[in-house]
Structure formats: C-alpha cells, structure tokens
Length: 353
View 1 (cartoon, helix red, strand yellow):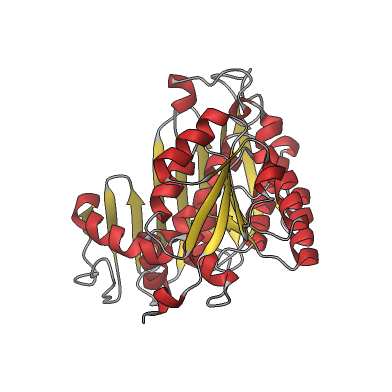
View 2: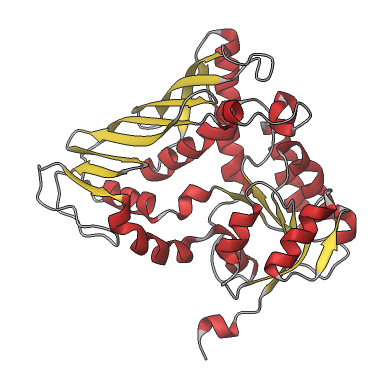
C-alpha cells in the first residue's frame, strides 16, 4: 500500500465561495489528502453552486454552523476584514486554519491570530500561492547554486486594470481600503515581495516608498499605485511596484555573475555556472537563454501538484511534513506592507525591526 493510500484525509470546510475559491477547488479536487465536506458563504447561491460543482454535502451561510460540522481544517478565502474574526472563532472551536493572503489587514491582526493559534495548539498557515510555482522553486535552487553570482538587485511589478474595466459595486469590499487593509500594495505586491524573500532567502529590513491615487481617488484614496525601494538583510536592493491602473507582471533578479527574469511570456536567464533543474537546464555559461511558457507548461503542471499549499498543510496537520507557510510568514510580509504605507505617508525611510 502506498504512502498516500495510508494517509488519513483531513476533513475540511471552506469559507468563502467567490474570488479565488473555484481555482482552489480545481487545484485540490484530485488530492486524497483533503476531504472537503462543507462550504460556507453569506451568499447562499454561491455556496450551493460551489457545492454542486464539486459534490460537497455541507452547505452553510453561517460560519458558526459550518464549524459544527466534523471538520479539522478551515480554509478561509473570504475578504481580508473577515480573516481575523473567522480564524479566532475557528481556533476556539479547535480547528486548524489556512488563510488566503494577506493573512490579515495589518500586523496587529496577524499577531492576534498567531497568538490564538498557539493558545489553541492548532496550526495557522497562509496561502502564498506563488511558492507552489516550480519556476520560483528552480530560481531559488539556481541562486543557491551560485548561478548568478551574488544577487544585488531585484525588481518586481504586479498590476492590473480589472477595477477600471469592470468596476466593482461601491459596496464591494474591494473598493474599501478599510476592509482591504490598504490598496494595491497589500493586494498585489505581497506576491513578489514574498517570492523575492523566498528566492533570495533574505528578509526585507528597510523601506522607502511613494504612493499615488490619480485615476480613481474616490475608490483608492491612498494606494492606487505604489512603488517601494527596499533593502534586504544582505544589503541587496529591491524595487517593487503595484497598481490598479496598469498591466504588469514580472520579477527579475540581477547579480554579479548573471540574471534571471520571469514574466507572463516566459523566462530569460544568464548564468555563470552550469545547472540542470526539474524545469530547464541552464545551457552554456555566459549566454542569454530563454523559454516561452508554452514550452514548459506541461512540466509545470506536473510539478505544481507536489508543492500545492493546501495539500502540504494537510501533511503538516498529520505530522508528516513541516509547515511550509506558517502564519509567521504572513506576519513578516505584512510588516513590509505596513512599512511601505508608513514611508509613503511620512515621506521617510522606515527600518523594519
């Protein structure tokens, strides 16, 4: 009998049936480690549609009622302002929690969640989905192998115009800085911030930032677009841009012996060391190489399954693997987000302690 056949599935409830939740279900539906037996959403129609599509027996509009089900894990995919109260209630009911990024709206809420998890002796995890992308896993391995020399500069940009093309209704949580916990930076830049820290294995320790709201200031009065220059622990410098008024998705790392970059079209690199990885071989040293996404799409899909965060969390619950993305990770990222906000408002550099 295989290891997976011996694995006792973790009975799971999912809170929030909009946004990213359909993608989450499609990502985990073929895994035996998770047994989703209940869903909850204040919109009963949304909960019923999700339950019907993925054959889930329990349907709830009340979160407290879902917690009465025989579940061990709660996946929280709700608006940012709901993360804290739902997690606290789940811990009080003895459930583990995995929360979609950002972990909370601010550092103080993160700390309250972490404290509650420890008091209840339950696990708290945060979903930083890009960590399951094999591209970033290989970028980290190549950096560890010295393929780029010492990384000195990192650049990341993530932006979309979805709110401009399809404006949410005024009462939608995505139009409320209070419910979001900010604007574009907490919603978008957290992805590349986390990936940069993951690939470099370095934390951000210093931030200087600017923010602007020039297109729809009534909707995002403070942080429609933000740019931050950061310093990592090793002294290298990073630049991160987020916006609801442009279309960008790229991250690049430059070092003393090479570089690597990923955008929606593909990957481009230059190395000073030979390297053979799960996704690609670096090729000849000193030559710029590139791959288009379609060339490695099938291999990415094969490898992504082993890194899927909810699946890994189930293994952590069963004590078969360490918790890869604990609440402390979400807390650290929010410390950077708060420093960016403070720097933009106070017009000064902020040191993160």
